[in-house]
Image (cartoon, rainbow, N blue to C red; front, side, top):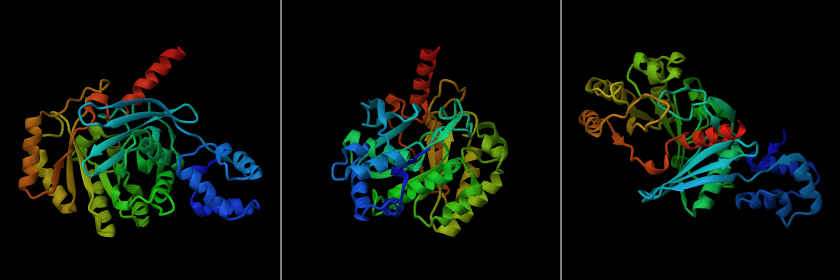
Length: 348
């Protein structure tokens, strides 16, 4: 398969252009077109015909097609379903905040982690996204919405650390001053806890934010809702989080979706407080999004507040995630799941 030209670092593109006998400055011209969102070599009008032919023969390029989009009447959240070159689809969400727009991107088509509360994993993993496809999620979502990019979160469909090489390349591309030049501290990567990748993540020496989907305070509970707990013990996840903080100096966030009768008791709040203080982590409490195919129910608002207050009273940095786009199914995987069902029905 041809390499997606959007996935190349600028020096990689430059080397390929020069090696093919073209002047070095042509690579900067190509990069300029790519930054503008041009995804057709034929329309790069300041390039000679032989260079455009070379690019077409050696690289792939594709503009994601908007299948559907929804705008929340409640808070302005925008959700997009993008069709990729191979016909698969991924979701991207743009969230409006007072300080600017945040784009939540997908890193895989589907997911194999199997978390019991998530729609993204229904149907399993189809394939990884390459770095250019992730970059295009950001670029075309901002372009389509007319927004201004302030931050990104890798919290959409897929597990970022299960696609480590492509995700690390994407992080470097979007952070580069020759690319979108987005500061590392405006980037948050969320993982279900693939701790065997944490050292490599730290070795990137980028100051992005790491969020760990914890959702439990012990092995037994975590195994009920997160199959990854069968691979990595709870105590090992906590130690890995603490070591990541000590190695990078970057405080981690524990994401904790509150599930009625599963992980929302006062005793579990007390245990979570002890863990968070040991790791020096921030806790982000999340109201569970209802998924039709799942039997799990969200914790009542009053019980979320009780849980929150226990953490607050123990001096744990804690927040309750603002629920955005509930009227447009803005939680991960729901829109793609609906599209897949429709596609399957048509094929039958």
